[in-house]
Image (cartoon, rainbow, N blue to C red; front, side):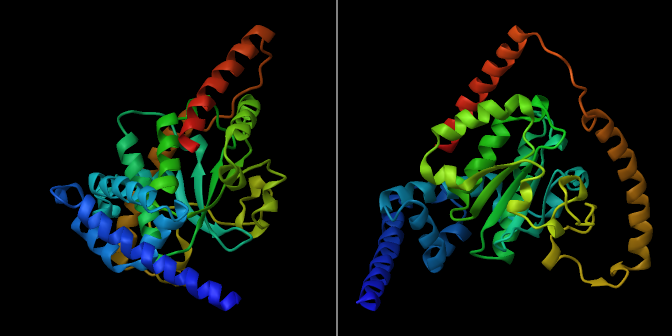
Length: 323
């Protein structure tokens, strides 16, 4: 009986996949072929797993899946996702180490790190930052198709100046719309005290599915989700990894290595030495501005409540993105 139910379920899924493809062709491609990258449209017609991902994320409601596909494909064309490469992203973004893939959680999901203290809101660079996130997600999707990610928002030594609502909304949409079924969980590590109460209010507003994926952890609690071997020492781990670029630090598919590190030619070594000199100058300037740990201050009670209410307002905006 169980085998019969499974067979019927598979047949129903196949029908919905075909219905989704046919309706997308009839309802969305008519007179609007320029909206999408033809490579994405072709993949939708051939890749059952892609269509299934959208259907599953929208509880197998075809109408909702079609809306998601439409929004996702338009975004992919606008950002040129299929053509993103290291050469299309400003080099300084790779060098700062604010976003990268490294390590695994206890369930074997790849870790996607966001070092929040290294992010400063800047309208001039926001588009490049969004493309940078898309670059990593697309790279991972091609290397590990169908495998979910665990997002780690490392908020150690961060403050209100590092919180960019537009960027947070974008990151959430990447998993909510653009890359269905990609998110295993989102871990918020070492939340600054000024935002703790507000984030708890946001959590109470979220739906059950969102709440189940959102995890808050102190430095002591993060080992509940990630073993020490993939945590840096300042989070109580033993991972000796230190971000550097080049090469891309994404473990299993980076440049071939020998016992002494990446295999490079003498010309590459000489070029890398000169690049490192420039990088040291960049990091010195970058870190002096944003990596200084704020001093503790005693706030008047009235000022404290003013800041708290502002935080709640910010999180009210954020909750609409997550719902």
